[in-house]
Image (cartoon, rainbow, N blue to C red):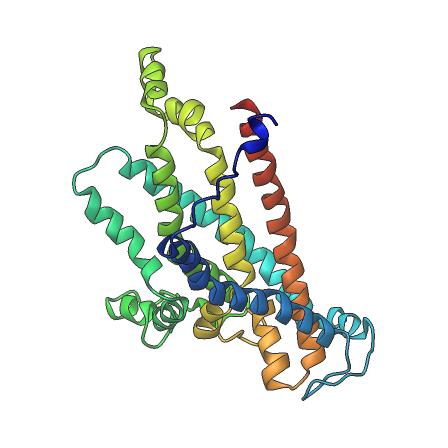
Length: 311
């Protein structure tokens, strides 16, 4: 008999119960949130999809009507106005908030005196909810008590600033207010990107004689290009889900001039009792979000794999 045959297998040391408990605690802590998120995102989304294909009106029903709710939705003039407003608002809102945010970030990046104070001032609107922002700005836009009344009280009696009272300009009042709310958020992300640029690149450009503006255009801004995409995606999400800002500022008026998809969904489901068509409108909003988030997610995955192969 060989020595190998006489070898007695050694039992693996038992894992201490404290170590097992330490491994399980994070799972136990996260499990309720993960379960709630799964139910909230996937289960409720499937339920909304079912309702959009049903004959539900005041209460959910099980009658299947196919795509009738979607056809009725797109045949509705108010829904088409809401979707048009969404594209108009998104374009000006995203470009405006990113442009102002980038400008503020570049100015603060010059190591100005009192930088912390300026950052706090520009970030302050982000700490205020959209419902508060909409309420305050509705006072400012009010021609009786707002900016128009104040300026006319100074002697300029012909001054007019009643944007929300005119259906042709009310959407621009929403855009201006949204830009004011989100420019600080864009500034914070851009400033973080500017501070992450390799100083050696900047010094090399300065040694070559590049001006400050040329250094930003040719060296710094191309380096933080992914941040531009991230800010744009986040702002698009804000724009698509816009509800409380419009509800507090214009309530969708005058008429239906500032109706947004979220406002229309709320009106259908909770005011008119048309749950089926309201669910169809909600699914169209989800489709708009998916059009934005899916390509961005795929780009993030592709970029990480490319960095892994290069690294």
